[in-house]
Length: 268
Image (cartoon, rainbow, N blue to C red):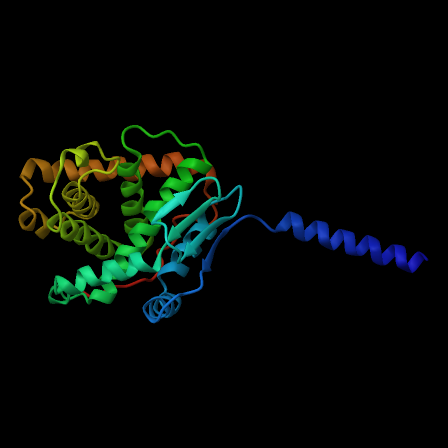
C-alpha cells in the first residue's frame, strides 16, 4: 500500500510539474487537401522554412496566454479569428498569389514566382499575427488596425530575418500587382484596408527607412520625393520603436532581438 501511495504521489508530481512547465505557444495545423493543386501547395509549404520560421520566432520571443493556431487550408482567409484564436491561410490564397506572380513574369526581377509567393505568405502570416497580438494583449491602436498590422509585418521581417527587406519588397510588389488588376470604386475608400497602391508605397517606405544607404534605389524607382524619403527614415524608426514598446511586456527578454533567423533571399 505504501508503494502504491508513493507511485501515485510521484505520478501527481510529474503531471503537475509538466503542466506548470508547459506553456501556450504558436502551432501549425495543415488541413486535409481536396485536390492535386492543394496537395502540391501543402507539400511545398511543409518543405519550406517559411511557416516554421514564423512559428519559431513567435515561440522564442513572445509569451502567449493561450495557444495560437495557424490553420493552413480550408476556405476562409487570410484572417484571424479572435474567438478561436486561429489564423487561417487557405491553400487557394497561396495558389492565387503564385498565379499572380507567374502572370507578371516576376522571375525577371531575379526572384522566382515560388520564392516571391513564400515572401508574400510570410508577410501575410505576420500581418495576421499582428491582429492576433492586438486582440490577445488588448493593445491600443491609433488609426486603422490594418495599417498597424502591415507595419508590424514589416518590422518583424526587417528586424528578425536575414534579407527581411527583400522579403518585404516581394510582398509590396504583390500589392502593386493587385492594384493594377482592379478598378477603384467608392466602396474601396470605405474599406478597412488602405488601397493596395498605398500599401505598396508604405511597405517600400518601411524598407527604405530601415536601411536608406542600401535601398536608396527605391527612392528613384518609386518616384519618392527627397522630402518623403527623409520622412520614411523617421517613420520607420517611430514604427519599430512603437511596436517594440507596445510588445515589451510580453517579450522573453533573454532571447528577443539577439539574432536574426537565416531565411536568405536571392539578390535582385
